[in-house]
Image (cartoon, rainbow, N blue to C red):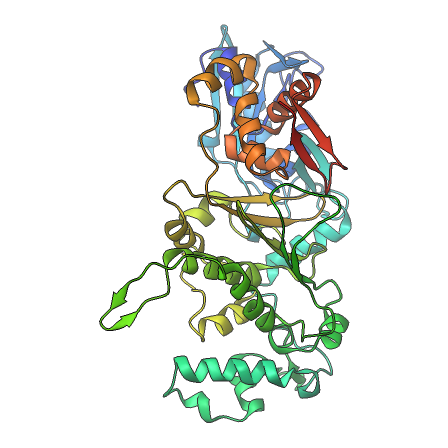
Length: 493
């Protein structure tokens, strides 16, 4: 934080992170932690983190220094309340996260609020999570509804979400064709494995698809077993929000042709995850070019692109929150691919891309795919996808969204291309803080990009993106077709 020397530095910070400035003067005018700091603390911790500066007044985007005359008192009150469970559920800040800086001769306090880990969420106020949990959305602190809070609480205590026994679900709810197809693939990959000779019930038990509770003696299919091998009616009864969706779409949206091909549970197939994977992976890789390559005397048809798409599809299925309201959705377009799973990431985006920390939401499903040589458990899923995919202009990005529902979005584009030239972009686009040419270039490649996705790709704040889009629309260069949710952009000139 010692890089701050002027108000201009604060303006630049807003372009890259979530930022909130508070005058924090108090009744005496000497400085105090304002009451509205605490919802902001909760909101940033439950989202992507951010920076709060106490002692700075912001009005209509213009900053001025108010200063904190009683800095020691402000710091003491801050940390006393942070360590008071009756005020806030967890303290995420250390002394290093609260730094004093002198601006225009006055002291201000810069607080770096990290994103809370899964075990610390929800970060809530006043000793009660329901009604006192906030999340940062569109530069504002929004109170979370009870369903969202309860989902955070479940994520906190359940390392794996797919192990519970589905009461009164048994072999009659299994699609035997799916199970036997899996067993054939398992036997092919692990020909000498002792499980190969087990009967179906024992095999399901060994795989984690069937479990007995040692305390209650309840036994039956686990959620993982039902999702992986079940029949559609049974899956829908046990997991009513479950839905899987594959779409092949044109790059240019057409209201008369929403998709060229689609796979959803429609009664003609089982609807389970294993069959969805088998159907979709063939469609994703159907028209990929395979260079002629021999390994010994055998042709190798598997390329890094095949591996990346395979890993991305498995990654989507094993990390999905099947109790959330968004669906699993896989989209194929001429410009690339999009993989969406319901549920927020369990680790920050930067950590997920870096790898090394595995925190899979559905560990039994993950193990099931691993047993047929699909996926991994070393926390290297996204890095492996990134390594296999990137190169020759290909671009991959990971986005975590909270509206309209919690969801994680992996986008893999063949190439976003050169965005109108870097020099002209700097000269025209970023003058006055509006990256207009960069936005137009990205939208030409993917007309469905959201403000959040543009902000993450360009490493700018959503507020900056919104201002730039307003300018483009006012100049007649960009038009919105359809509603804000579900519509698309059209570049006019």
